[in-house]
Image (cartoon, rainbow, N blue to C red; front, top):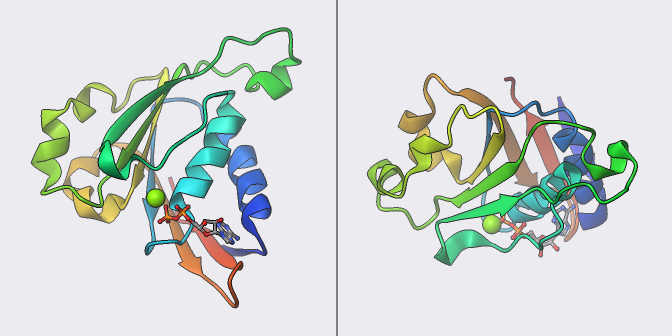
Length: 156
Ligand SMILES: Nc1ncnc2c1ncn2[C@@H]1O[C@H](COP(=O)(O)OP(=O)(O)O)[C@@H](O)[C@H]1O
Ligand SMILES: [Mg+2]
């Protein structure tokens, strides 16, 4: 089902809620053109997992690892809903020469780990790596005007 989000805030809140449905071991495959909101979505997802650090666009980093902050007296719900996810792996495949480059920096060590979630921007570029993984594909599109975005979650 395709949903419409009227501004960045709505996308962030949606991604934050989506994060609470994750169990660990998932690969979230974000697909959509430049500016569609893939990094914004990742930012919301990170917040939903209880990550305090600000998510940057990893375009120049390729891969960045974020640790879920230990819950500091917050209600469990706010601190990341008591899930066992400890690590968010954020990948931006935009500038990748190929899937081999990601393998070279150790992406396969993270796939399927029950205590980690991997988010891949431009996931269609490394599709062959995702076969056999627990993939949730998320398609993002520009909508009407400057601030509308359409997001479709395509199975898991
Ligand atoms: N509804 C919306 N959802 C997400 N981002 C939005 C929305 N409306 C405007 N934006 C803006 O669009 C841009 C999306 O950028 P970004 O998340 O970096 O895109 P991508 O990673 O897909 O290239 C940001 O500048 C953000 O503020
Ligand atoms: Mg991005």
